[in-house]
Image 1 (cartoon, rainbow, N blue to C red):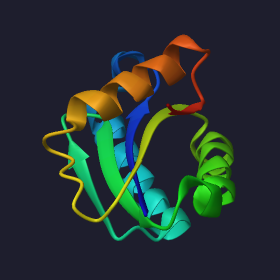
Image 2: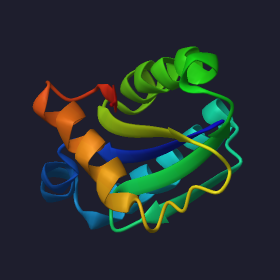
Image 3: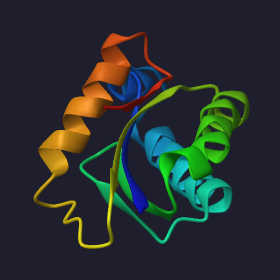
Length: 120
């Protein structure tokens, strides 16, 4: 069992408008480093402007603490929030074919107040 996730930075467009694209790019670089340091993913990849996909070894239950730690670390260190859509699947899960499922879960997290994780 593996955890696949799609992370979206909440209100990133507003951040860019307020602080500029150069600061936005710096934020994305730091953000990506924090994802890799905190989650130690099997892989992580940036999609689009402010979305990142990742894979963790083990079930959601096994990774729950580190995922919730990521929410807190990002908020404290960067002053932003994120929303995460999660799927549990075996190693044959093709995230490219299932991106809509991950996106749907991420959007549910946003609709439920942002700075949340959704696994359904």
